[in-house]
Image (cartoon, rainbow, N blue to C red; front, side):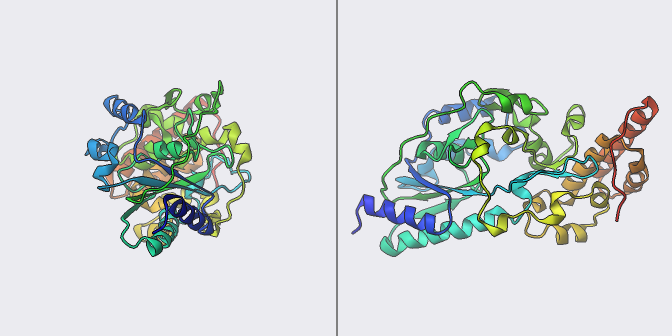
Length: 358
């Protein structure tokens, strides 16, 4: 029978052999974040993400997720691709984590290999694996494990690799050695707060998701609030502004995972071309991409807002054609975009540059 120390070493060695950049073990509890999470929900900061408020007790008590749980193996996998992003208003901006293969598939496969390594020496052990897919507060667990600390923008930061990484958790009933929790190193810095386009970081360590561009363009399924649309700019899937300005990301390095290298057709997608996507073309273009989760209607809703924000009269004929779309959500946002462009044209506002479709 392996000792606690031996089992911990097996888990960590397997994680490193699988390519994980960071691995540490946390106790199955959230500490102060249990209360913080309840308060966040009470303030309605979760918006339309009703699943966050359902089964709260199960979400904050890990023994209800895995009875008999003793340890949580926390894992981090770097997805960073250094280099300048295109800021041309005629193209859509997609969050860096989505410019590649869907991370769920990559994370799941690697975590299963870690589980297999443990099961080989402890065949009676029980496990649950999650990568942003289950009822766990993954950032709180990762901080407890010492992977990093939750920054003022509420993302996890590592002193070694910055914040461009995915998190995964392996819940187990095996008794493993715990690592020490991570201290915060944000200090007096507030760059992320000042950089947020919509003011979603309402206070240090407090995010109102209802104003966050990542929530508005990904999680929100209905109509984007009119007052927030101009602040979205040409972001069509997520937002990286708070991470872009974080000083700790000067330590970020190129990912070693080929699945996370940027796809050329996603790095600077033409807005007008995206607006003309059919269901079939959408499925083909975004097969294997995280973007598929918002479906065509969500993407075209976002594209319409981005085109409206270009203030470019050349977009008018393409938007007018899009008014015939069968989805009322898309039509409503297209109508708003047309209104914004026509009003800007009458006022003499300077338009942005719009690519002509290929």
